[in-house]
Length: 102
Image 1 (cartoon, rainbow, N blue to C red):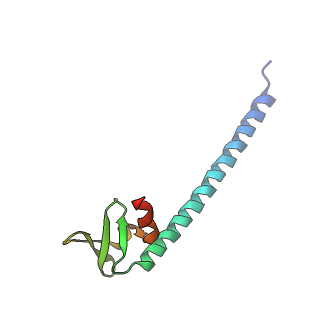
Image 2 (cartoon, rainbow, N blue to C red):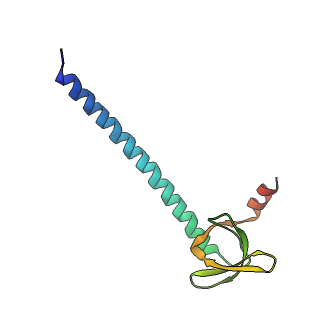
Image 3 (cartoon, helix red, strand yellow):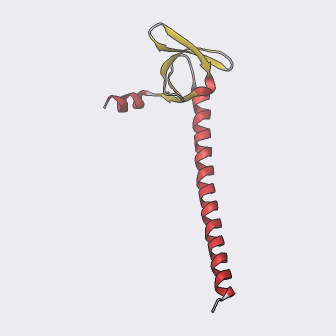
């Protein structure tokens, strides 16, 4: 009563379904990574003195100086820190400030 044809067909079907799901998740992930990479590239190219920024750790600040690989950021009145420019996650623009105040 045990049919190897049924077992092999079921295994093959499950393997195909798992492969399709794996490639689907990989494709979505690759698209999201590419999109985020472009966003970060824009952040680093548009960075200038006076820009309002958010660090990856959640600190908000204003850029007061830019060097090669680092930025000086005022995070509070009279408090300036030196940080890697690659730790900056977001540039705050006028639209973001309006959304936060709502």
